[in-house]
Length: 170
Image (cartoon, rainbow, N blue to C red; front, side):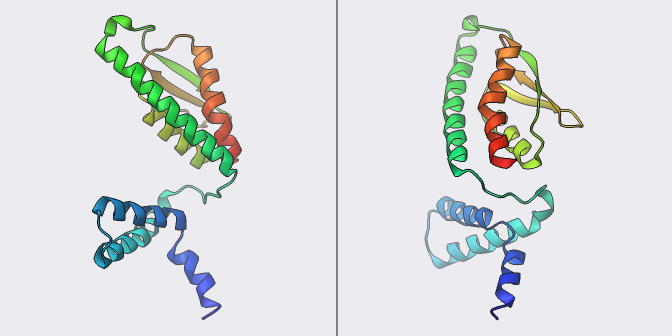
């Protein structure tokens, strides 16, 4: 039994943090702590990572928790600011500072998990949309609701998001 558990556990829980997060989310959404809800959350927390194992590109190692926290706070602040900017553009189109446009962002980032996180960040931020990633993953095309200086925007994306993601994932 002692030898069986260390080999069985990774097979049963390929992504333990994801399993825990799914179970917790199920409990919060169900707004109940009864045994049935907990058991169903446990089943989903185990089954979903097992069924989606092939969709995850590479195993993720959590590194640099301080960098992760800094990036999360930065994304939260940027999302709030972008929400306010997008609201301004939609409610008062005459106050638009710059026209919409596309920005080409050259990427040094290569880790598939980091690219996925970058896609989530871009999609969470109102006013930006992920348009295309080149086949060699060296160039990202973003649509920006108000694009002033493209070079300045590219520098902002690289400094605020790409550099921390490289620190975390590579």
